[in-house]
Length: 180
Image (cartoon, rainbow, N blue to C red; front, side, top):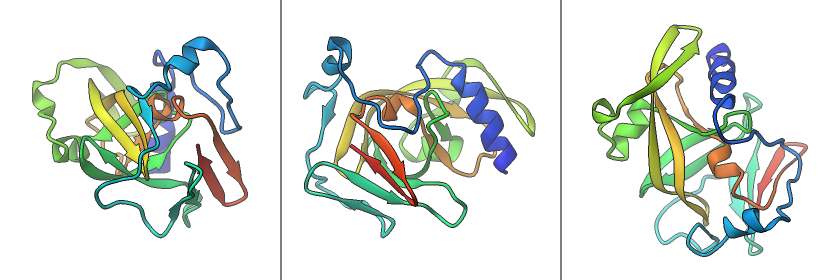
């Protein structure tokens, strides 16, 4: 299963969005600052459900995720109004949704045009690109987020750079990832 994630992450990394590192990334240029307008990025509190014992939100607009037993970080993301469990993957250039998760948020996967293929351990699988209205992790919301629906048995959707790159910082210290 891990091999499939690594292969998928490598394929998605070749996409159009630059791959960031897990180290702190401060936005300093005007283009990046434009992405943080109220139309695209908010830190308003959630109005419905969310979060897990592994994530905490501070009053300063930060979300802290604890490392899971498998060494990965997971977030319960509100995607277009539906709670989706996602593995945080800074190596994925865009959000990668499983077919099951895409259908759960109301996407008719079969009506989306195939935009290419992803090479996985199980072979080549179709990949369809979609624009998500909103992705929110414990109050940190990004609007109009590019994603790919991958017809592979990934097991879990990936929270990639199309969300992470819109944040002020993504830090990992020990067993804690902080999103800001």
